[in-house]
Image (cartoon, rainbow, N blue to C red):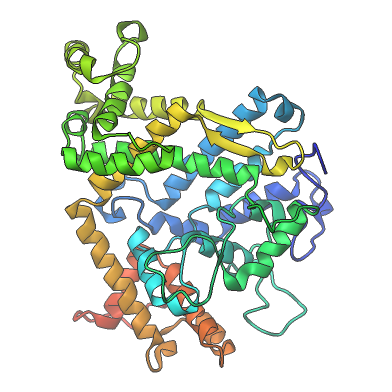
Length: 468
């Protein structure tokens, strides 16, 4: 296995298939096709990224975000193949990274992280809810592509998209089992559901057949590439959306509330391993990025510090109205493109010669500082702003009220027919039945959740002729 990035069992599946019937495309390309055509992928178009979809067609949703992450992940894979000698000889398969990025958010419920928190609170006694765990569950069980023939149990019969083990491994971000009883937890726990541990064990055996994971974590090189691509997309495109929405502008950022900047700095410091990163450093990162985009490199002093802020701001005002980065569509998208290219070039790899498939992908220190600054600032300044918080609060309440209705007496009668069958198949197992309810709600788009809630609670009359 040493010095081999891929092994013979990577392309195997839960249910064996004849991979030779279409010799013009390999198993990993079939995986990609299945993802693109599955309903869970399409439903991302109706799930919130930052701003609710009904606000504007311009803003990203989970689907367009995933498409952008996929392009970045593929670019990172091609770059690493070109710059690292080992990968030049044993290249990463960019298609797996591409597919992983398309999949990475399909487990997210309606209304973003507030919807995730709501479902997790409802499911605390039954393993909780977590977006990444739900993603694995969707592709390995819930999607209606393949079924097992060796069981009559409706729940166990499902095999999801029956993807290859290597593709499944590429979405396993957190190698941590989420236990069934989580009543003492205060927050969402990252990992995979306890009931899906056999699936994870099979993935590990297929991708790393000779490795003992009792003392190390499992995270493949493709999964790590998808993860850094997600961070790059999140840190750049969300800033672009907030510029377009008028929530932020360069001048607002550079003069933002110092107390918020200190909160951002504390979070960034944790991620980069620094206890001296300050609010002034947050401002300096933004100033550096704005100035390097607007001004030619020869006009800049090496680095940006407090002592040169006044001079650089004067130069920016002289050569280019700083606000145009937010207000001018061409400059706004050019700035985003500049950041993406800059951050992709900061991705590095450290090859594990014994287990190449678990080689370390990371972002070099300066680039990581910039990415984490953008990510955490956007979260504090926009996602936690009162305007967005009100919308998300409403979404959290909707999810909880739907769950309570379905979990109540005769609540199963409110489910679509196929979910009623699954619910009844779990008779005698409360955890299994609650998971069916959770699966149903998690698959909703924002609009469908609002519509379903309205059928249950709204004063307005709702038609009985539209199917659930």
